[in-house]
Amino acid sequence: MRASSGERAPVDFCIPCNPYFPTPEIFEHLGRNLETILKFYPSDAGTITAELCATLGLHPKTVAMGNGSTELITWIDHLLVRESLAVPIPTFGRWTDQPLETGKRVDMYPLLESRNFALDVQDYVSFIRMRGSRVAVICNPNNPDGGYLPKHDVLQLLDELIDLDLVIVDESFGDFVDCEPDAGLAAEAAVRPNVIVLRSLGKNFGLHGIRFGYMVANPALAGRVRDALPKWNLNSFAEVIVFMMRQFMGEYQNSLRLVGQDRRAMFQQLGTMPGLSVFASQGNFLLIKLPPGYDGVGLRDHLLSEHGVYVRECGNKLGTTSQFIRLVVRPQDDVRRLLIGMTQYLYSGSLHEIPVIGVHHRHVNPLSA
Image (tube, rainbow, N blue to C red):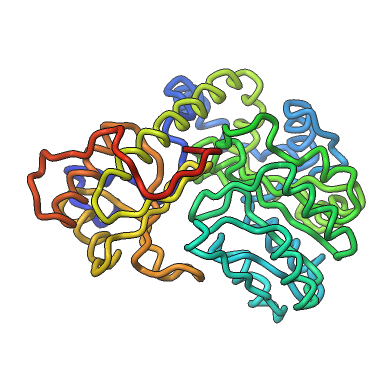
C-alpha cells in the first residue's frame, strides 16, 4: 500500500483476514474512542484475560494471552520444548523456524500432495516414535491448505501421544470450521497433562494490526507461560476489543457464516479453471496448484501489477513449491477481479470468460466441499 500510487488500493488475497468483521459500527466506536485508547495504559494482562474467559466460558487459570500467537509460540518454545519437535509440513512457518532458531531438532513430517495434504494420524504417530520426538504439533485447520482433521481423530492423536512432553494443537483458524459443531479442543486441553491449544483472535476478527491470541492448557502449563509474560504485554486496542466481544458476538458469528458461503463459492469457481488443482479447506483461504508449466511468482507479479490483486505465492514454504498459491476467501466482487486476472495470465483468453459455479473440479472433500 505504501508503494502504490494511492489510486487503487490492492485487494488483499494474501493475509488471511475476516473481511466481514469488525462491522462498520465497531470501527466507528473505536474511532470515537481513539484518543482514550491511545492515551492511557491498558489494564494488566490478568484483567483482560479474565474478561476473555468470562466471554468464552474458560477458566482464567487455564489461559495465557499473548501479543499475537507468535509471541506465545516463542515462549512455548523457550519454556516447554527441550530438545525436539515434530511438525507436519507444509504448515505455519513459525512452528519450524522458531525451534530451529533456538537449536532444537525439528522432525518434519511431509504431508503428501497425492493425499491432498491430509494428515494420517497413525502414520504421524509412527513417525514421531521413529524419530523420538518429544513434542508434537498440528495446525487444525492447517495453513496453507486449510486441511481439517476431525475432532475424534485429534482426540485419538492426543491419546496416542500422552507420554510426550507436549502436544500442541494450533487452532488459529478454528472458528472458520463449519463441517462439524464444537470443533475446538480447549476444554480437553484444560484437563489433559500435556496439551496446549493455541488460538489467534486477530485472524478470526479481521484485526491483524491488534496483536492478540491466547493458549489454553492445564493450570500448571498455562501458569508457566503466563508467569513468563510481561504484566502489560497486551495493548489498549486488544483490551477494548476483548471487552466488546460479548456485545458483538452475533455479528461475529454471522461473519463466519458469510466466509463459509464465500469459501464454497470460490472453491467451485476456481475448480472450473482448466488444469488448476484446488484443495478443499476449512480455513478462510484456499490452496491452489497452477497448471504444469506455470510458476506462482509470475502470476503473483501479474496480478499485483495489472489487476491490483495481492496473493500469497508459496515458494518459500517448506513442503510446497512456487507452483502453489494461497488465496484468502473474499466477497464475490473481489473474487471476480481475481478470476479476471488469473484467466488472462493462465489462458490468454477473454477477460470476461469467468468460470461459473457447478462444473466438476479435481479435489473434493465431503467434510468441506
